[in-house]
Length: 131
Image 1 (cartoon, one colour):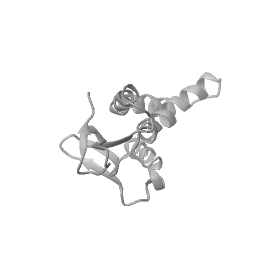
Image 2 (image 1 turned 135 degrees about the vertical axis):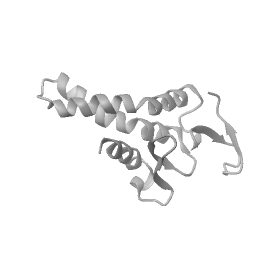
Image 3 (image 1 turned 30 degrees about the vertical axis):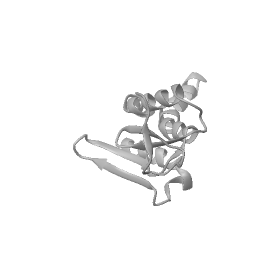
């Protein structure tokens, strides 16, 4: 259930809140991971939001609530900690994105690799972002 909620939060930040045919939710059996991906270039700002939404909602918000003194059920603590550990790749890609270029510049994410569309911004013309 946590994996599904995590990926649905990624989808919720896609253009159209995940209802577009360009939003894909799937599972990679060889890597044993669920994924949500947007199939077109998007701004870096939106890409950051897509990467960090599950971490913010499922890990950071419960932590802030606990710090404010509200009672937090042990199950929510478990969900928060587990999600934080699942968010490693999301945080890694967000950090890479912040390091490189303007936040308004388009980016394309495909197969665990980030690309920047060239001047014509078509899928046929992409350049690999530096790791």
